[in-house]
Image (cartoon, rainbow, N blue to C red):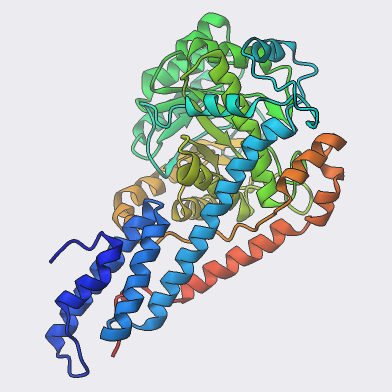
Length: 510
């Protein structure tokens, strides 16, 4: 039988291989079942490659053929069609976020008034658009932005593939069983963590500096220890390191230099020298943006992602200006607040908003990316924290991400690192990686229900004009957006759990 990977030939394939009437016998039904399974698997393969248009054509062809041959329950095809329509609309939304993020660099600009080093770099490169008198801050030339972003590599030698979970954030305190004293890790305790990470390297796909250490061990000594014991991709921040120490990460395919620069459209002066040094060194850069909805960024999901994307793009442009072709990993890490206005890693939206930003890059830009999730706000109940983290990782995996930091060992909104939790997280993650990979590849891509906000650029512009995202009219209008999105996602997940199973999807209609 001819291949069923070509969407436009689906109906012809069915017609050439099936003649099923009302008197179809069991053998014909079995044959029909195999053909339908092959067609659906072909469509799902297109989905998982983010080619939703081809998948949609296959489903439409199957629907047309089904009217003549009655191969499958009509509602099953309708369910697939509805999902693929949602995915195409979702991808269009990410394409708009990418366009708007680039547009912000040219129509709103970045506040560089107190950043003479950055201004000098951009002026020397002829990147500033002096003819634009409508921007709030310093605008960049659109063609310069495009030229720089086109030079960002879409892959790098040490990347570890989709759904890769690891440590990160350097929590300030080590959680010790039976000891509530808040202290950083000693050199001996840090070495125990290194040994555990080495033992569980099949589960730890990116090993960021896992916890802050006391004065017995410098950041550079931590890096040397990680180098000796962990064979995979590693990440550290070099801000506190001397020049010769930071150079240790330069041009290393197994290291990312984690750095940040922007907050609320303004460079953090304390980060400028280390950012420029890391870019000049040629280190692989993990460009971090830690904007929190309703606090340092807009309340609406689309506007929040647009702001974060714009700020990471600016970091990419600056890095490419300093060192063209340097690896830049999109480290947009949106945060969610709880009702008391604290960062909440227990919120179901924490993995979802990070999965949305991962989809922006996996589906549209092609930039390698790193997200955050798989952790918990719980700090005093280890068993519950382990369970909550596993649920968060399952969501991230189900919706599809790239590299995820903070997913193993962290707890208490990234305040603590627990070696005991880390080891249990790793055991569970290793089991999933070993046993669930094939199942994961066979599942359709779920819709994320990200709500639209046509005024996302206006939200960022208003924030720039007022200087404080908390007080903008846009934030007041969208104060309930996150809660409404959470309700929609949970309702969709509940419906999916209670809906048809994978076997019913391939059931031949009676």
